[in-house]
Image (cartoon, rainbow, N blue to C red):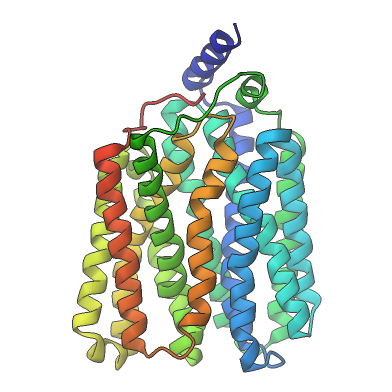
Length: 403
């Protein structure tokens, strides 16, 4: 009986016309991703603050993936057990507290702690956001909504990096703007979430006796998703966010701004098409483009790093394909799990990427730019392999209703 009820509700949600409730979901999730982008960029950007000692850079930057890892794993699991709405309120509250802490702190130890807290909240928030988009939105609009709302993370990165470029020497102004974003955007998100209903699919799924099937095909599919998730998490971090503090500290803000601006524009302009496209096709396109662009960077590395404009151009080209790969991963992860396991499934897939992110922040401290570039190339080889593996073993999820 519950199986029939679940199928009926799934079909009802899939065919439902877009309405006011869907706009609320889209609005609050978009704010979530915007704030996630701001927080992703803030860790490397605040290494430019005058009171932050150089030896602490790696700990501040490392606190970000550590928080994301903890939030993804814990909040994804808890939301599968206790529901989406209340945990969605909790994760945004934690995020706002962390960002306010960053905004008022003038001690590097406090910054490390508050970066971790903010990212912990957003790690859980990101997992929940994807689960909610799948479980609440009609099938016709689902892909577009996922791509465009998740692209707000890129817009958040671009916005905060741009503000740091406009006010490069005023820490007080930078902190004030960060506090304003935390309070205004966070307050709006919490207000919208309060007016959400609990996920009907989650309500039914918790009563079902469904279990994940561990088969060779499912294992390969899970491995493929993990490779793609790892490539986007680690590749994006090291090619867009961390490369500045590691190798071009005077140009950190500029590199983050222009590389992620390319991703933002790709998402805005191409989001509708990407959301409607075959998931397998955009995954292969994105990761093959990333692989080729970084192979070119390595071949001409000497000339590229000697010319800032050429470096920015190549990073921007890579970022265009990065957004396509990002979109594929944001679509495939939630679409491959049932509601009962969706939160923890997304969290587990992303955990490998965050673990590697933390490890290689410290492993590459003394690496030269050539080693650094080869590392990024290796990451994208793994992502490309994952896209090929998924093409062979995975489902085309574009028209599969959530359940």
